[in-house]
Image (cartoon, rainbow, N blue to C red; front, side):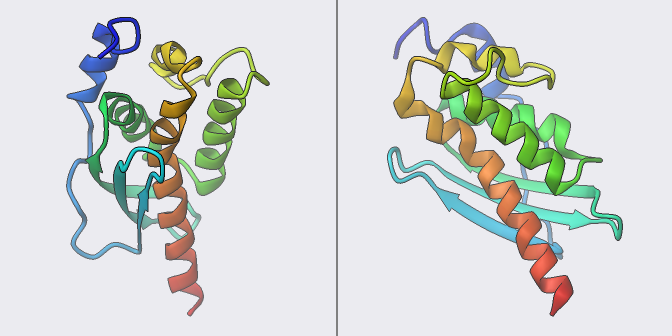
Length: 145
């Protein structure tokens, strides 16, 4: 482990993931797996009629960076729409690609700056967002059916 990469802040976040349980009757669910590192994130959602996330369930099997990212997402996701999550993911990806100065405006996103030069870790960090976005899409598909 690199001391510069796995900072105290990253490790603190990694052990503080909120909503770390699957939901019994979700409106939508998704599981995403990283091709590069094998991390797995499952997300369950309950969504209001106006598209706002009411409840979130997460199962995380990832490195400390993926866990830290899931903690940030879990702390911010309730009350947000799929569009909000897509926007946050896009900002974070743009930062990693060198197209944005900051990883995002959510609390603790600045802690992910340490991973910018570690391209192999970017997928694990984005994985929680991908799983939540896919769960939103699954909920929309189920509602339309």
